[in-house]
Length: 249
Image (cartoon, rainbow, N blue to C red; front, side, top):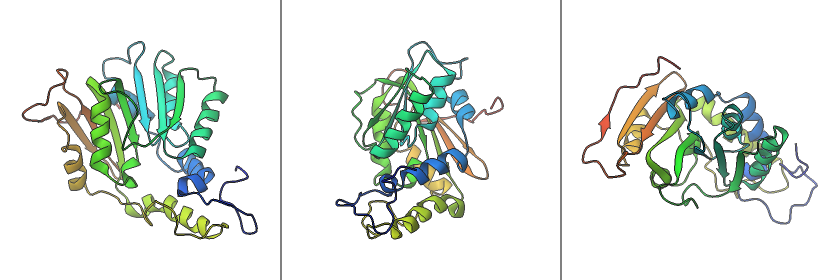
């Protein structure tokens, strides 16, 4: 735990953080490491279905937190470059430390907002998004940015929880921790509880962008979407939804 994470009573914080993920970055990092499911293999199969990524493939992890997937993919595929983006500066610092401890020169992190990415249009080969839509202010705007930055034929992997009770535990705990800090609870931008999407809402969100194709998969804990931008980089008149083939995962 960092000394300034979730400050305890008696310690002065002149300017309280405006994000629970900034205030309690250590707690969220623990949850990402030990509580959340590891989808690395599913991500690899979904994003690189033709036997692995090509040399120089650029992968973007949005809402990367402590850099779990960016580091995992960089370590497994040394010939690609991954970038993690998060709104929490403390989590970005943890992600950088994670990459440095593993000597991952092909893995970088930057502070940024998923609603307005700095990447040029049509510049990213693949995007990873896990549990981000639970807390973002505007889901459609974030998905629109993902679509914008993806290259033609680029793919994104999206994983969102379906279990309300289990999903809300981390955020609820961070709110509780904030009440024990020297900063009064209630001044953070995150909602009081994570907003879990129904399968219908999830489908509506995914279909809000003109994908060339997209696949869905559901299990007892998560719902997934693998979306591909049209190779021609044109808006298709009709989306083609194809059945998911996860037999190799």
